[in-house]
Length: 329
Image 1: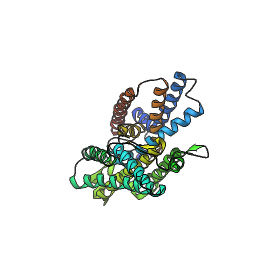
Image 2: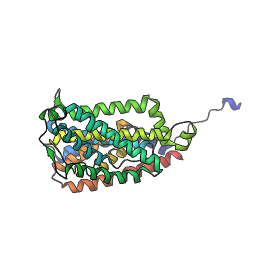
Image 3: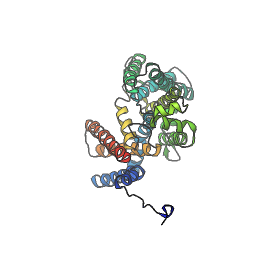
Image 4: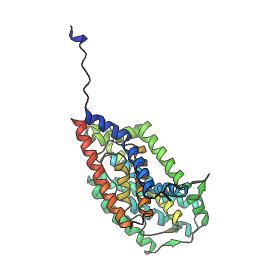
Protein backbone atom coordinates (compact mmCIF):
# COMPACT_ATOMS: atom_id res chain seq x y z
CA UNK A 1 0.00 0.00 0.00
CA UNK A 2 1.40 3.40 -0.97
CA UNK A 3 1.78 6.16 1.57
CA UNK A 4 -0.72 8.29 -0.32
CA UNK A 5 -3.45 5.74 0.43
CA UNK A 6 -2.80 5.55 4.15
CA UNK A 7 -5.64 7.09 6.17
CA UNK A 8 -4.54 8.64 9.45
CA UNK A 9 -7.30 8.36 12.06
CA UNK A 10 -8.39 11.54 13.82
CA UNK A 11 -7.09 11.90 17.33
CA UNK A 12 -9.83 12.35 19.87
CA UNK A 13 -8.70 14.84 22.51
CA UNK A 14 -11.30 14.85 25.32
CA UNK A 15 -9.88 17.96 27.00
CA UNK A 16 -10.00 19.92 23.77
CA UNK A 17 -13.52 18.72 23.03
CA UNK A 18 -14.65 19.87 26.46
CA UNK A 19 -12.93 23.22 25.95
CA UNK A 20 -14.75 23.74 22.66
CA UNK A 21 -18.11 22.72 24.10
CA UNK A 22 -17.62 24.96 27.12
CA UNK A 23 -16.78 27.99 24.99
CA UNK A 24 -19.80 27.43 22.75
CA UNK A 25 -22.49 26.35 25.19
CA UNK A 26 -21.15 26.42 28.75
CA UNK A 27 -22.24 29.94 29.64
CA UNK A 28 -25.80 29.37 28.37
CA UNK A 29 -25.95 26.16 30.41
CA UNK A 30 -24.89 28.06 33.51
CA UNK A 31 -27.67 30.61 32.96
CA UNK A 32 -30.26 27.85 32.50
CA UNK A 33 -29.09 26.11 35.67
CA UNK A 34 -29.30 29.38 37.57
CA UNK A 35 -32.87 29.88 36.39
CA UNK A 36 -33.82 26.39 37.56
CA UNK A 37 -32.15 26.81 40.94
CA UNK A 38 -33.65 30.28 41.44
CA UNK A 39 -37.11 28.97 40.55
CA UNK A 40 -36.76 26.29 43.21
CA UNK A 41 -35.48 28.73 45.85
CA UNK A 42 -38.21 31.30 45.16
CA UNK A 43 -41.08 29.58 43.33
CA UNK A 44 -43.65 32.30 44.09
CA UNK A 45 -41.76 35.34 42.86
CA UNK A 46 -38.80 34.52 40.62
CA UNK A 47 -40.60 33.49 37.42
CA UNK A 48 -43.24 36.21 37.56
CA UNK A 49 -43.28 38.55 34.57
CA UNK A 50 -42.63 41.59 36.74
CA UNK A 51 -39.55 40.01 38.30
CA UNK A 52 -38.14 38.83 34.97
CA UNK A 53 -38.52 42.33 33.55
CA UNK A 54 -36.82 43.67 36.66
CA UNK A 55 -33.89 41.31 36.06
CA UNK A 56 -33.53 42.60 32.51
CA UNK A 57 -33.78 46.19 33.72
CA UNK A 58 -31.19 45.72 36.44
CA UNK A 59 -28.90 43.86 34.06
CA UNK A 60 -29.02 46.55 31.36
CA UNK A 61 -26.45 48.83 33.01
CA UNK A 62 -24.20 45.89 33.86
CA UNK A 63 -24.36 44.58 30.28
CA UNK A 64 -23.39 48.01 28.94
CA UNK A 65 -20.46 48.36 31.32
CA UNK A 66 -19.36 44.78 30.65
CA UNK A 67 -19.45 45.29 26.88
CA UNK A 68 -17.12 48.27 27.26
CA UNK A 69 -14.74 46.46 29.60
CA UNK A 70 -14.87 43.47 27.22
CA UNK A 71 -13.07 45.46 24.52
CA UNK A 72 -10.26 46.47 26.86
CA UNK A 73 -9.84 42.87 28.01
CA UNK A 74 -9.67 41.71 24.38
CA UNK A 75 -6.33 43.53 24.03
CA UNK A 76 -5.15 41.96 27.32
CA UNK A 77 -5.92 45.16 29.22
CA UNK A 78 -8.54 46.23 31.75
CA UNK A 79 -10.62 49.29 32.63
CA UNK A 80 -11.22 49.81 36.34
CA UNK A 81 -12.57 53.33 35.89
CA UNK A 82 -16.00 52.52 34.42
CA UNK A 83 -17.83 53.04 37.74
CA UNK A 84 -16.26 56.47 38.20
CA UNK A 85 -16.99 57.42 34.57
CA UNK A 86 -20.61 56.38 35.16
CA UNK A 87 -20.84 58.71 38.15
CA UNK A 88 -19.08 61.66 36.48
CA UNK A 89 -21.05 61.51 33.21
CA UNK A 90 -24.32 61.11 35.10
CA UNK A 91 -23.52 64.10 37.29
CA UNK A 92 -22.53 66.33 34.36
CA UNK A 93 -25.65 65.31 32.43
CA UNK A 94 -27.86 66.15 35.42
CA UNK A 95 -26.16 69.50 36.02
CA UNK A 96 -26.48 70.46 32.37
CA UNK A 97 -30.22 69.78 32.51
CA UNK A 98 -30.51 71.77 35.75
CA UNK A 99 -28.79 74.66 33.97
CA UNK A 100 -31.51 74.65 31.30
CA UNK A 101 -29.75 72.61 28.63
CA UNK A 102 -32.11 70.61 26.37
CA UNK A 103 -32.41 67.00 27.43
CA UNK A 104 -30.97 65.41 24.30
CA UNK A 105 -28.00 67.79 24.17
CA UNK A 106 -27.24 67.02 27.81
CA UNK A 107 -27.40 63.29 27.07
CA UNK A 108 -25.18 63.57 23.99
CA UNK A 109 -22.59 65.94 25.46
CA UNK A 110 -22.65 65.10 29.16
CA UNK A 111 -23.14 61.37 28.71
CA UNK A 112 -21.87 59.99 25.40
CA UNK A 113 -19.24 62.55 24.40
CA UNK A 114 -17.82 63.04 27.90
CA UNK A 115 -17.65 59.28 28.32
CA UNK A 116 -15.70 59.03 25.06
CA UNK A 117 -13.29 61.78 26.19
CA UNK A 118 -12.68 60.13 29.57
CA UNK A 119 -12.02 56.82 27.84
CA UNK A 120 -9.72 58.60 25.39
CA UNK A 121 -7.75 60.01 28.34
CA UNK A 122 -7.33 56.49 29.71
CA UNK A 123 -6.07 55.22 26.36
CA UNK A 124 -3.78 58.22 25.88
CA UNK A 125 -2.18 57.70 29.30
CA UNK A 126 -1.66 53.99 28.58
CA UNK A 127 0.05 54.83 25.29
CA UNK A 128 2.10 57.70 26.68
CA UNK A 129 3.41 55.97 29.81
CA UNK A 130 3.63 52.40 28.54
CA UNK A 131 2.17 51.24 31.85
CA UNK A 132 -0.35 48.43 32.08
CA UNK A 133 -3.98 49.67 31.86
CA UNK A 134 -4.56 48.25 35.35
CA UNK A 135 -2.23 50.89 36.81
CA UNK A 136 -3.56 53.76 34.69
CA UNK A 137 -7.24 53.07 35.29
CA UNK A 138 -6.60 52.40 38.97
CA UNK A 139 -5.41 55.99 39.09
CA UNK A 140 -8.22 57.46 37.01
CA UNK A 141 -10.77 55.74 39.25
CA UNK A 142 -9.75 58.19 41.98
CA UNK A 143 -9.34 61.15 39.61
CA UNK A 144 -12.77 60.82 37.99
CA UNK A 145 -14.47 60.14 41.34
CA UNK A 146 -12.77 63.17 42.83
CA UNK A 147 -13.96 65.35 39.94
CA UNK A 148 -17.49 64.08 40.50
CA UNK A 149 -17.35 65.05 44.17
CA UNK A 150 -15.87 68.46 43.36
CA UNK A 151 -18.39 69.54 40.72
CA UNK A 152 -21.31 68.28 42.83
CA UNK A 153 -19.96 69.53 46.14
CA UNK A 154 -20.54 65.93 47.27
CA UNK A 155 -24.29 66.43 46.98
CA UNK A 156 -26.99 64.71 44.96
CA UNK A 157 -28.55 66.56 42.04
CA UNK A 158 -32.26 66.09 41.36
CA UNK A 159 -35.36 67.94 40.19
CA UNK A 160 -34.58 68.01 36.47
CA UNK A 161 -37.01 67.71 33.57
CA UNK A 162 -39.36 64.69 34.03
CA UNK A 163 -39.23 64.18 30.25
CA UNK A 164 -35.69 62.89 30.75
CA UNK A 165 -36.85 60.03 32.95
CA UNK A 166 -39.77 59.26 30.66
CA UNK A 167 -37.50 59.07 27.61
CA UNK A 168 -34.61 57.05 29.08
CA UNK A 169 -36.19 55.06 31.91
CA UNK A 170 -39.67 54.55 30.47
CA UNK A 171 -41.10 51.78 28.30
CA UNK A 172 -41.31 51.36 24.56
CA UNK A 173 -43.79 48.74 23.37
CA UNK A 174 -43.91 47.48 26.98
CA UNK A 175 -40.13 46.94 26.96
CA UNK A 176 -37.97 49.06 29.31
CA UNK A 177 -35.96 51.58 27.30
CA UNK A 178 -32.68 50.76 29.16
CA UNK A 179 -33.03 47.15 27.97
CA UNK A 180 -33.50 48.34 24.38
CA UNK A 181 -30.48 50.65 24.64
CA UNK A 182 -28.30 47.84 26.02
CA UNK A 183 -29.48 45.46 23.28
CA UNK A 184 -28.83 47.99 20.51
CA UNK A 185 -25.35 48.73 21.83
CA UNK A 186 -24.60 45.02 22.12
CA UNK A 187 -25.65 44.46 18.49
CA UNK A 188 -23.48 47.38 17.31
CA UNK A 189 -20.47 46.09 19.22
CA UNK A 190 -21.11 42.54 17.99
CA UNK A 191 -21.07 43.85 14.42
CA UNK A 192 -17.76 45.61 15.07
CA UNK A 193 -16.14 42.45 16.41
CA UNK A 194 -17.46 40.12 13.72
CA UNK A 195 -17.66 42.16 10.53
CA UNK A 196 -15.09 44.97 10.60
CA UNK A 197 -11.35 45.24 10.18
CA UNK A 198 -11.24 47.12 13.48
CA UNK A 199 -12.65 44.10 15.29
CA UNK A 200 -10.25 41.68 13.64
CA UNK A 201 -7.31 43.89 14.55
CA UNK A 202 -8.42 44.10 18.19
CA UNK A 203 -8.53 40.31 18.42
CA UNK A 204 -5.11 40.10 16.75
CA UNK A 205 -3.57 42.51 19.25
CA UNK A 206 -4.97 40.52 22.15
CA UNK A 207 -3.75 37.25 20.67
CA UNK A 208 -0.19 38.43 20.06
CA UNK A 209 0.59 42.14 20.25
CA UNK A 210 4.10 41.78 18.84
CA UNK A 211 2.92 39.76 15.84
CA UNK A 212 0.11 42.29 15.29
CA UNK A 213 2.65 45.13 15.29
CA UNK A 214 4.84 43.34 12.74
CA UNK A 215 1.70 42.87 10.62
CA UNK A 216 1.31 46.64 10.42
CA UNK A 217 -1.49 47.08 12.97
CA UNK A 218 -1.33 50.40 14.80
CA UNK A 219 -1.52 49.21 18.40
CA UNK A 220 -1.66 52.69 19.96
CA UNK A 221 -4.59 53.71 17.74
CA UNK A 222 -6.55 50.58 18.62
CA UNK A 223 -5.77 51.08 22.31
CA UNK A 224 -7.36 54.53 22.10
CA UNK A 225 -10.41 53.09 20.32
CA UNK A 226 -11.09 50.30 22.83
CA UNK A 227 -10.88 52.69 25.78
CA UNK A 228 -13.14 55.15 24.00
CA UNK A 229 -15.68 52.36 23.48
CA UNK A 230 -15.44 51.51 27.17
CA UNK A 231 -15.91 55.17 28.09
CA UNK A 232 -18.94 55.56 25.80
CA UNK A 233 -20.60 52.48 27.30
CA UNK A 234 -19.94 53.82 30.80
CA UNK A 235 -21.26 57.24 29.82
CA UNK A 236 -24.51 55.78 28.49
CA UNK A 237 -24.75 53.73 31.69
CA UNK A 238 -24.40 56.95 33.70
CA UNK A 239 -27.29 58.54 31.82
CA UNK A 240 -29.49 55.47 32.36
CA UNK A 241 -28.63 55.35 36.06
CA UNK A 242 -29.60 58.99 36.57
CA UNK A 243 -32.84 58.50 34.65
CA UNK A 244 -33.80 55.40 36.64
CA UNK A 245 -33.09 56.94 40.05
CA UNK A 246 -34.26 60.47 39.13
CA UNK A 247 -31.10 61.78 40.78
CA UNK A 248 -27.36 62.03 40.14
CA UNK A 249 -25.43 60.60 43.08
CA UNK A 250 -21.72 61.42 43.52
CA UNK A 251 -21.14 57.90 44.87
CA UNK A 252 -22.99 56.14 42.05
CA UNK A 253 -21.24 53.21 40.42
CA UNK A 254 -18.92 52.33 43.28
CA UNK A 255 -17.88 48.71 42.85
CA UNK A 256 -19.56 48.41 39.45
CA UNK A 257 -16.22 47.66 37.79
CA UNK A 258 -16.12 44.37 39.71
CA UNK A 259 -19.53 43.36 38.37
CA UNK A 260 -18.61 44.44 34.83
CA UNK A 261 -15.36 42.48 34.83
CA UNK A 262 -17.17 39.48 36.31
CA UNK A 263 -19.81 39.66 33.57
CA UNK A 264 -17.17 39.69 30.84
CA UNK A 265 -15.01 36.94 32.31
CA UNK A 266 -17.96 34.71 33.24
CA UNK A 267 -19.21 35.27 29.70
CA UNK A 268 -16.17 33.49 28.30
CA UNK A 269 -13.83 36.41 27.63
CA UNK A 270 -10.24 35.36 28.15
CA UNK A 271 -8.55 37.49 30.80
CA UNK A 272 -5.34 37.06 28.81
CA UNK A 273 -6.76 38.70 25.69
CA UNK A 274 -7.67 37.71 22.16
CA UNK A 275 -10.76 35.60 22.86
CA UNK A 276 -14.38 36.33 23.72
CA UNK A 277 -17.77 37.16 22.25
CA UNK A 278 -20.25 39.95 22.85
CA UNK A 279 -23.03 37.35 23.14
CA UNK A 280 -21.18 35.70 26.01
CA UNK A 281 -20.74 39.05 27.74
CA UNK A 282 -24.49 39.72 27.51
CA UNK A 283 -25.24 36.29 28.99
CA UNK A 284 -22.64 36.95 31.68
CA UNK A 285 -24.41 40.20 32.56
CA UNK A 286 -27.71 38.33 32.82
CA UNK A 287 -26.08 35.78 35.11
CA UNK A 288 -24.94 38.58 37.40
CA UNK A 289 -28.46 40.02 37.29
CA UNK A 290 -30.06 36.67 38.17
CA UNK A 291 -27.65 36.10 41.06
CA UNK A 292 -28.29 39.58 42.47
CA UNK A 293 -32.03 39.15 42.03
CA UNK A 294 -32.32 35.79 43.78
CA UNK A 295 -30.10 37.00 46.65
CA UNK A 296 -32.42 39.98 47.07
CA UNK A 297 -35.52 37.77 46.95
CA UNK A 298 -33.99 35.61 49.67
CA UNK A 299 -33.22 38.74 51.75
CA UNK A 300 -29.48 38.13 51.60
CA UNK A 301 -27.53 41.28 52.49
CA UNK A 302 -25.92 43.06 49.56
CA UNK A 303 -22.50 42.73 51.20
CA UNK A 304 -22.54 39.04 50.40
CA UNK A 305 -23.03 39.83 46.72
CA UNK A 306 -19.52 41.27 46.62
CA UNK A 307 -18.18 37.99 47.98
CA UNK A 308 -20.09 36.04 45.35
CA UNK A 309 -18.83 38.27 42.52
CA UNK A 310 -15.22 38.03 43.69
CA UNK A 311 -15.47 34.25 43.94
CA UNK A 312 -17.01 34.03 40.47
CA UNK A 313 -14.14 36.05 38.96
CA UNK A 314 -11.58 33.73 40.55
CA UNK A 315 -13.41 30.61 39.36
CA UNK A 316 -13.96 31.98 35.84
CA UNK A 317 -10.32 33.04 35.37
CA UNK A 318 -9.15 29.68 36.74
CA UNK A 319 -11.35 27.82 34.26
CA UNK A 320 -10.10 30.05 31.45
CA UNK A 321 -6.48 29.31 32.38
CA UNK A 322 -7.12 25.56 32.58
CA UNK A 323 -8.92 25.50 29.23
CA UNK A 324 -6.19 27.58 27.60
CA UNK A 325 -3.58 25.15 28.90
CA UNK A 326 -5.53 22.15 27.58
CA UNK A 327 -5.82 23.75 24.13
CA UNK A 328 -2.07 24.26 24.00
CA UNK A 329 -1.38 20.57 24.56
